[in-house]
Amino acid sequence: MSKKRRRLEIKVDPLPAPFMDETASCPVCGRDAAAIGRRHLQIVFRCEGCKVVFKRNRSWPYIY
Picture 1 (cartoon, rainbow, N blue to C red):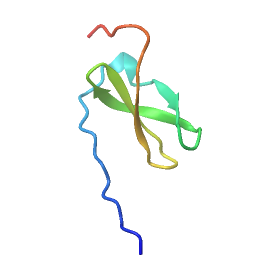
Picture 2 (picture 1 turned 45 degrees about the vertical axis):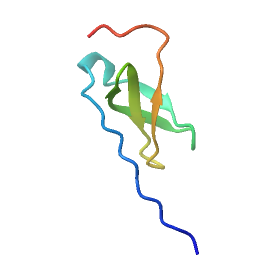
Picture 3 (picture 1 turned 135 degrees about the horizontal axis):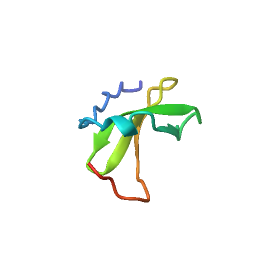
Picture 4 (picture 1 turned 120 degrees about the vertical axis):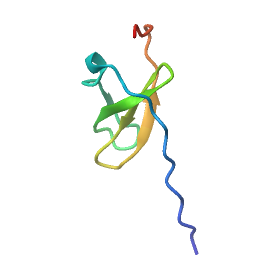
């Protein structure tokens, strides 16, 4: 009998408007995922296909 896992919610801060159109490739299914917010200096993305939430580092610093 398998256990049902509880969904993990990542608390995100608002993302500045110029970064809201960022997309990233989903690590699970490979589709484009939209930005939903930021966690410290990382943009947080959510894939609409498989509902995976993941973060990505940028190679340049943010200017807020």
